[in-house]
Structures are given as structure tokens and as C-alpha cells.
Length: 272
Image (cartoon, rainbow, N blue to C red):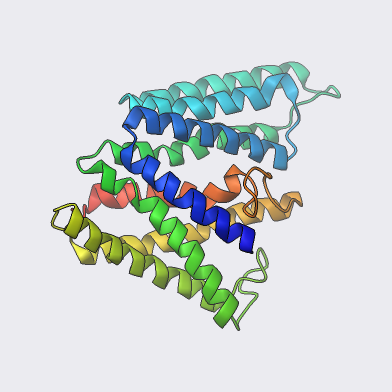
């Protein structure tokens, strides 16, 4: 637990600083690395076979999508990458059908999720950065995911009595789930006050509270969703890159869900 907290306290502020200060193209490069590594970890955890460079094609596809968003060609890039990746996956599958090296359809679906789905969701960070006042908006998903995880953890450890609300993660409690929601709302309000005071922007605190509530709920669903994959694949962590946290996907699983949700909320109902 101590290692997890120390690493989190070290990397969290560094990543927030990178989000705030980096221009969109540099941020896209960071997100591209995260997405590429996350997709590789997903394929490894799900035991997708190394057929015809499936790992390489998927990781490259995952890295290209955030870069396309930074240049303003996000939709075009995502469609092009999806088509090319499908071709790279299905063409060898057609040729190897009925052989010992047959490529299963479920392997292709995992590759598409890792190579298109995950980077498309994480690219919401790049899109938020391109908004007016994007240096403040881009922090929303990470703050929401981080504070929700922290709140859920500590509420669950110290107050958790009603455990087993889901068999995916039996140790998670109802108190931890509620604590995560409350923490997300509280810290989003605090962040809104900081933006108002130091950023000189008028902030709709009621909207920030809504960001916190909905963002935290999606964050907890994201965490459980990637835990479900690990359970079904019988792995503890997606990797060992980050001591106490696991792999890149273990650290950014919640953000993968929170980022597109908050992007949608910002587009529909901007807070500042």
C-alpha cells in the first residue's frame, strides 16, 4: 500500500503538470505512448496470439489516433486507422482459416478494442486541450479519476462494511462506491474554486458538481470493467511498469472511461 501511495503522489502531479503545460501536439505524443502501451498490455493479458504482427499493428494504430486528434483530423484518422487495422487483421485470418495458425474472431475484436477503442477514448484528453481554456478542461478527467479512486479506496478501507456488491471485485464495498462519488464531487468543486480564483474565469459550480457526480460514476464503471477483463483472463495486473499500480492500463483504466464522458459533458454543458 505504501508503494502505491508514494508512486501515485509522485506521478500524479507530474502528469497533471504535463497536461497543463504541454501544447496539444506534445500532449498527443504522450497519450500516443500511453495508448500504445495500454493496447499491448491488453493483448498480452487476453493472450492474443502473435499472428502476423497483431501486437505491432494494434500498438501502431493506437498511437496514431491521438496524433491525428492533435492535428485536427481526429475523426478522419480514427476511420482510416480502423479500416487499415481491420484489413491487417482480417486478411491473414482469411488465409489461415482451418489451419493450426487460425486467427480467431475474438482475437480480432480484442485488437480492434485495443487499437481503436482505447486510444479513441484517451484522445478525449487531446480534444479537451484544444478547447478555449483547454489547459483547465484537460485536467478534469484525470482529477476526477484520481480523486474517485482515492476516495473509494479510503472509504472502503476505513468504513466499508457492505462488501461483495459485485463478484468482479469482492472487496469493493457500497461505502467505497459512495465515497468515490462524494470524493469526485467534492474535489471537482474545489478544482472549480481554484480555477475561479487563480484562472480568473467565472465557473458554474453546479455544473462542476455534475461533472464530479457523473464523471465519478463512469470512473468506477471503468475500473470495474477492466477488472472484469483481468478476472476472466486470470491475471492480477496488466503489467509491472508502475510499482504498486501494475501496468499502464492499470493506471489509466478509469481515465479511459472518464475522459470521453467528461468531453461530452463539456461539449453539452461547459462550466467556464
